[in-house]
Image 1: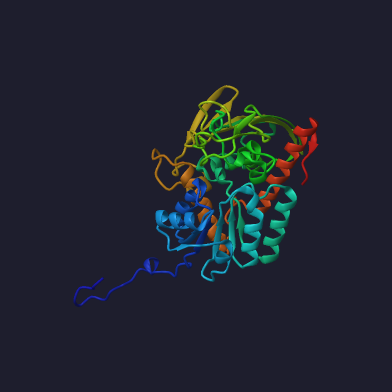
Image 2: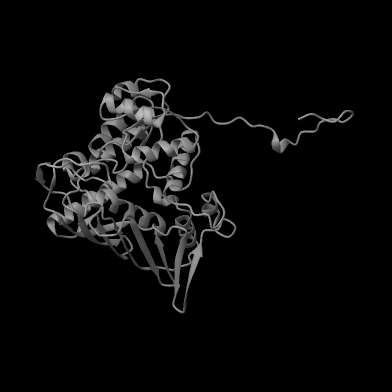
Amino acid sequence: MTAPIGHTLRIDSTHVRRPRAPRPRVAVLGAGMIAGVHLRSARAAGAEVVGVLASSPERSRAAARNWQVEVAYPDVDAVLGDPGIDVVHVCTPNHLHVSQARDALLAGKHVICEKPLATSAAEARLLADTAATSGLVATVPFVYRYHPMVRELRARVSAGDFGPWQLLHGSYLQDWLLTPEHTNWRVDPALGGASRAFADIGSHWFDLVEWVAGVRLAEVLAEATTTVAERPDSGGPSFSGRAPAGSARVPVTTEDALGVLGRTTDGVLVSATVSQVSAGRKNRLWLELDGADGSAVFDQELPESLWLGHQNRTETVVRDPASNSADAARLSIVPAGHAQGYLECFEHFVKDSYAAVHGEAPDGLPTVLDGVRSAHLVDAVMTSADRRAWTTVPG
């Protein structure tokens, strides 16, 4: 900027450049669908994605080319030994989460670890204890918390708009494993854990209900079913996992669907249906919170609005940063009428994780402690389904 001759240049202090926080330097473990989402979100949040580690050196090189990142790591030790890496995103199959995330923390790296955090509550607690001892940030992507209208609903709950809870219910339905020709590593308990549908998607529903409604499940009664008895022994990526022709078939021991009944510590009844075999349902996370003074519905496939019910009327509230709560407005990156969705949720989650790395404490950021809570719920639900009895949820 040049001042006219004879005039003194005045600089508005509000426009003075301020120092920025350093860009996090990131490595991604995994190269599947969700790893690609992490990559996109990391870049959107301002990180430099340095390198990737896939399931083999050849696949690492292919992912590095496709993602246009500098380094194709040959193994985990190379990632953890890279002094330039600040944050490791763990996007590998479930059975690897604890060892990789824990080793990353012990190597001085912050961690964003995919869910489920572990295949048992005991392992999840081990990882949480490691994070606490290290003083490093470790977060888990329960990203549906980051829909602006979820934040709007939570603000209205906090304001007491709905009164005491009467009933909390809903479902999380998908169809990507509907046919016997489809499979994925998640079907194999050695890779995905003893629970599939609940650990993969039911965990999201219960995290959202507990966090938004401000409740805690005390006990559960669950019934699980496996509707496809055999699947191919190898498959493809999530949501498109048709097996190669001629694949051998193996018995399925993880659940395709389940129903869960529960009670909160305050005695409120909770019910949910979880399925990966519901035709036409691609990613329908739907929840209803029924209170003495009103009800509310959030549908993840229609994330730009809330349905609110009163005894003598109903209304629809839409995402609009000009009128929504402050927290909802913070997560609105475009004006009303310009749709936001899942990818923006993930970006905000990653951005908040990086803010935590820089010493901030973003509201609602899901950490390893939320991952431990989810692992306790998974264990309780699967124990209940096995025993066909009410089961206490620890914590």
